[in-house]
Image (cartoon, rainbow, N blue to C red; front, side):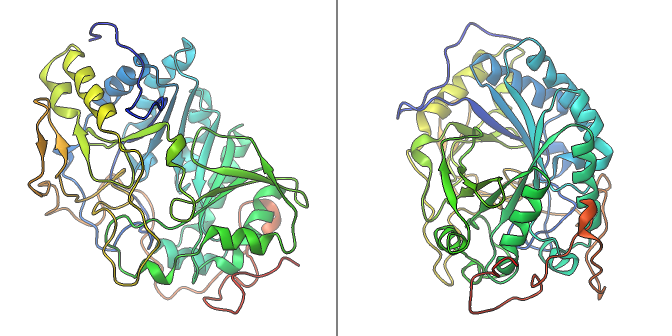
Length: 412
């Protein structure tokens, strides 16, 4: 299927693209409030690429010099046959053409897959975790899954996977808990990265109420901890510090208060074969059409080249203004993803669509697909924290508070 030899991937601003984030499904077994609305409508399966097509696309990027692949969703571990894709991609690790194969997960099904991921050559994973308090977690995720997530993290560690925790900083929900989350992660030899909320897709609340500047968070942390800037990088957008008192590494992803566009080395491929060159803009290139038009990769490589030429210098995120529309219409889970406007989409003809048409995948699907595993939301259940010492169940004092004079609680 390989076409003629192709050069590496460079955009118009001299940035080398060496990292592709690949969404394998738009579906998820959680409904995090900052990520999606509670009543999401997902793509019909007919619009989603097969695992074989995803593998072929990834292989094409590897041949063009991509050194890192990250599997995402939605939630990647709800995609049927996901381990077949992981094992197929691991051949690029074996022959040295790929440096890293990794994934980002919510951790709900991590116990089931940890051993297989490690055996396939995955060395490290990111796990999204926004609270150690069961009630707070359930409120954010709309699902009472904290015990499964913590158990999955423990299973991943037991399997030899290096775990990094990703935490979205939410003013009303988990701000008071941030120091406890950092201490908890560092005590278990895990890095943790804090992430500002991003204006992607319409959700059921005004993000202005939840936005927490990580510049302010850092200043508050420095009132009782010593944060030493670190030159370390993980291949993504996080800027890291070392916390002297905990000995661990803390990352900050700040798309609103301090963007990282000048060093952007990545693009994002959705489960429908749409390539987004920037998380914060809607312009995209369709790779599914050239992929299916020929068993050779000439058309596909030409479409990838057009995408590189169209990659913008920076995203369009602005600090939140109450009542403002999201910066882009697609939800965070679209890259991942759900309904999104197709304006700015480029087909194999090279013509840019700007008709504002929506994809046809928005109607008729149930809230939970048959291939999803995980409980539904919390229904009047009381918080049930367990012993934090075993790494599987934990409770952080003060996490239940949704308000307070200080951004978060000073560690005791």
